Image 1 (cartoon, helix red, strand yellow):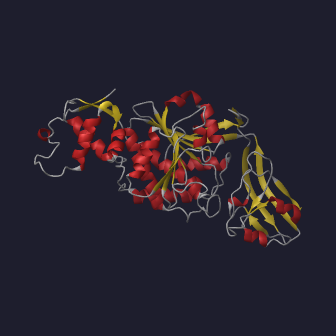
Image 2 (tube, rainbow, N blue to C red):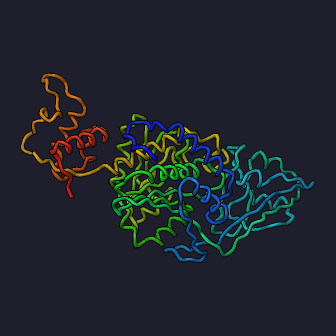
Image 3 (cartoon, rainbow, N blue to C red):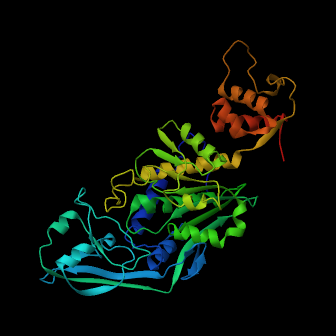
Length: 439
C-alpha cells in the first residue's frame, strides 16, 4: 500500500529503495532495441506490465492520423560489417545503436567509397556512437565511433542488415487510474529509443513507478499514463482519442529525469495553466536550483499536445533538457550516466506535483467580517507580544483570501508560503467550521 503523498519540500522516506527499483528496471530494459514500431517496443511494454498493468494498443500500418499515416512496422534480427578477412568489425549485437534505426534490409559486398556514405560518427566525441534514425525515408546506415571508422582501411567490405519493413502495427501502452472525478491528468513519455537511458528509459520507468504509487491512493482526478513512440505515437493517440480530450485538465511529458542535473520545466503553450504554476511552485520551494522555460514548438511530445488545434495544458518535466548535455543521443547516455538517487528525486517531485493538484481547492470564509477569534478555537497563540508561527501566518492568509475566488495555490503564491503549510491551515480552519469548500 502506498503512503500519503509527500509535502512539496520533503523527501519521500522510501526514496532510496525506489531509486534502486527504478534503476534495476532500467537495467532490464536497456538492452532492448526499440523503435517507433516493432517487437522491441512490445517487449518493453510487456516488461513494464510487471510494474503497472498497462494495456497494449495496436494501430494498423496505413491508418490515417491527422496529417500523418501510421508507418510500416520495422524489426531487426542482426546487422554487421565484415572486413576483407571476414571479421565482424561492427556488430549490432554489441550495440543496437550501430544501425540507423529503421534501416531497410541489405546484404552485399560494397566498396569503401560507397560504404562511407552510409556511416555516421561524431568526430568531436570520437569514442561515442551516435544515435540516428530514418523513419520516413527508405535507406540504410551504420553508426560507429570515429575511432572505429578511422581503422577501416580495406577497399571492400561485406555488409548485412537483416531487418524487415512491412505491414504491421504501431503499439502504445496505456493505463488509467479512475478518480472520483472524470477530469484527467495526462502523463506521457516517449518509449521508442533503443539503448539510451536518460533520453528515453528514465521517463518510462519513473512514469511506471508513479502510476504504481498512485494506483493505491484515493484520488480526486483520474490519471491517464501513456507510453508512446515519439511524435507519431502522440499524434496517433490524439487522433484516436480526440473526443475525450476535453477531460484532460493537466498534463506532463516526462523525459531526461535520470541525470544528476538540476530540474527544468518547460511551460505549456498557455504559459499560465495550473500545471505550469504547480510545477514552478514545487521546484521553487524545494530549496534546490531549477530552471523554467517558456513553451517552444521544439522538443518532445508537448509540441503535439500543445498544437493550436489541440492546445492541452501539458508541460515538459525534465532534469537536463534534451540536447543540453553532451551524452544526448549517443552511446554515452548509458547506465553509468543515470543515477538511482536522481530517478528517485524525480519521482519525489512528481508526487509533490500530484499532491498539489489533488489538494488545490477554492474555499469560502464563513466568518468574513474581521478576523474570527482564533485563540478560543486553538488556532492562535494565547500569549500576545510574541512572534507568530508559520502556520498562524498561513491561517490568516487563508482566511483573508478565501472569498470564493482564490484557490489554495493562489494563496500560496501571493503569501510566498509553501503549499503544504497553506493546505494545512485550510484543513485546520475546515475542522473549526470557519471555511467551506465552494462547489
